[in-house]
Image 1 (cartoon, rainbow, N blue to C red):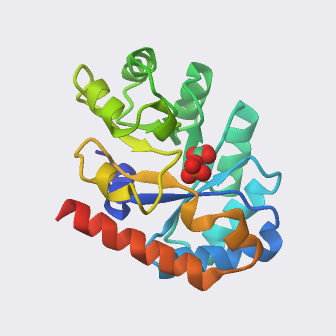
Image 2 (image 1 turned 180 degrees about the horizontal axis):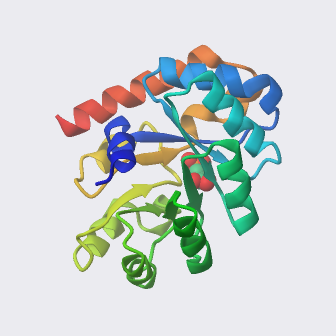
Length: 213
Ligand code: 3PG
């Protein structure tokens, strides 16, 4: 795996973040994640302030790996790069976006859940795919079935991942890391529960270690 994929895989969990108030929340959130041993974030473009959130998180914790999620247009890839994003996540497989990200030399993790998606990913030499929405698409059983014809891919299941099923996913060598919003829910962020977020990150990291022991 390349260096960034390796680093994300070592952390094992990727918080999927929607920040409605990046001016107020991006800096303390970045600190809370890093304090919990999870120095990585997928900041989704579901909220208009995503580029600002990415910029502030990188400035606050320069060693943190910050990427952009829910990216659906090339213009958003440009905005994400401009803000300092180090990776792009798309909900589905859009070849135009994969090509564009590769032209711009930024990592992209497209959402893939079907054999056809995996065929397309092969064409672009991708190593790690987002498997989205994970639970709703068949969970680990489907990921294992897909890995039989496509053993070259590692996946980041996202969608329905929680502290309850994290260990099960991470126990499989096909899983690079799990994405999820459970440690950065809207309620936690809106109520500025930074200590609780740090605690959920610490619990997640413990599970990563147990699953891979
Ligand atoms: C995503 O965009 O990756 C998902 O919406 C996150 O799914 P979750 O909220 O079920 O963790």
